[in-house]
Image: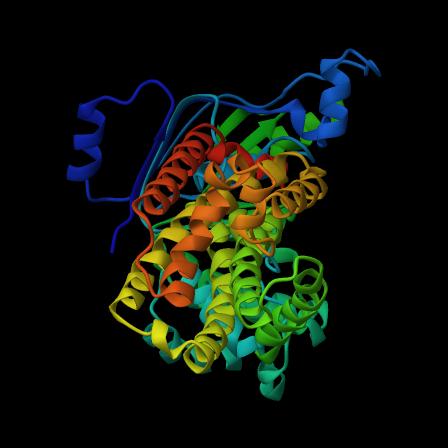
Length: 271
Length: 227
């Protein structure tokens, strides 16, 4: 099943829509994307402070919207394994979440064709009171699978996560590592066409990491497109065939992995 | 499960004992009246109050998936609905025992009453979930607001008490009264709800859906920033 979604601000035409329908191959296409984080988020989070502001009481230092992505254009085609590199706050995760259509862009167009499988913060979206087995089902439903499909995947997930009898315990009794293992096992058991990975390669103990890396390699082989962010440059070298360097929300380099790493290092020395 | 019945039952006994004496009304009539009011009101108020946290509790899902945010409010409403249905089953048993003469075709109207009430409460929960996420102190405000509505609604006071006190506008223009009547008319009086009850209930649902759709259209995509 192919889910196609189309987010745009201004420039959608009927032709674009037609284009998406006819073209069956997967792609990610960003054109002049700008994204602002609203500064409201860290001011006036309560009615009280909002009213104070309206009445002109308690003047606060002016804060401006954060321009998190600046005029980003990016075209990713099948076979691309793209590594996003950049310093903290450069906009890597923001870009990834924009591709996943989680963030509303301020201007530009984002079009994504293909079933997206995103691995962001792994422990997100667990029901703490429910058992591991129930959570496998819930997360599967969240990913658009039927209970029957999840049942067939269940044993494999439990084996991979190495949880044994703990799978029938409530998630709240799990250690952080166990939770990560389970989340990783579920999210990678359900295949997708576009794989988005946010720093997940660095989670879990050594034993699990070796297993996880193997699994990610396998997933990357199956997925038609992969985009990952990582600070681990060796992971980028290992897994990617293209790299994009971000700096303060702008793409400053897009091309080969080795050159990208060079650019990234020069940028790091400047700061 | 039994708490879904016991909790409103205890409240009912309390209200009936005190208010029934104060207003000198027939306890056998008044007790089921109070009970029916409390269980439906509890459904409305817990959907609105807990609804404030619907998106905050679902942040793990919202940060990963692009599902319509209204489903997280529906989740809260469904939990409250299960409690309502359990308590309502208890209420029906009570009515069948003490007022068997009310059993009749009019009870079929309950099949429409519940969907209408849900269609009022769901958009209400959507509204509180969006506002409660944007303004974190909204949940305190809504608790106070809902409490105020409860005192001016015929939940445990009888509608006649309002009329006698010449404050009948609190009943006639109060959507809560009309919603409660959708349940009370068939069960307590063996009659179909009045047309005005249905008009008010459906109208309230329409207005709330309009407001909720406006808020969804304008704010749904921004909500992830507030989590």
